[in-house]
Amino acid sequence: MKTRSIELADANKSSSTPKSVMNRGASILDFILRVVAFIGTLGSAIAMGTTNETLPFFTQFIRFRAQYNDLPTFTFFVVANGIVGAYMLLSLPVSIFNIVRSSAKNTRILLVVFDTAMLALLTAGASAAAAIIYLAHTGNVKANWLAICQQQFNSFCERISASLIGSFVGMAVLVLLILLSAVALSRRK
Image (tube, rainbow, N blue to C red; front, side, top):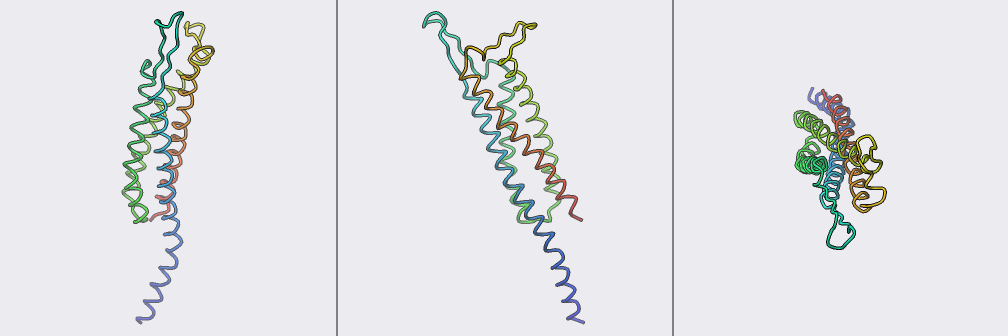
């Protein structure tokens, strides 16, 4: 009788091992994606937050200066990326916990909820900044908005455009994290 129970226990272990390995693999991928999102959003916040350019106007004493905080949209972009970057950093220990305990369900649900909120915040910041950057590049004749990136402020325009890349990478990674967590939760019983 004792050998039969040992055989059943061994059969249960061998059937749950592939599922456990899949859950652990998903948790490791979750951790790596969180690091990538942290780097992308922090890089975007730093790139936008350190952007400025000064151009002379007729004389050396009169200058035009462009900074990210001249437009509240860019300030919101920096704050949104900073918040999401901080969240990604703070979520790394929870992700490590999910690697150690691959059967944890509540922490994964908590991450899905916060990941969704951070995706909404990051999307709002990046979309608003993208709209202003588009206007800076193309202008709008009806609104009397001049395209400042066509002839002047080239360095400023290049940096604010490049800062969107990390934000969009962060958005894509957050979508992948939400999908990965949903799949991992659906595989658990």
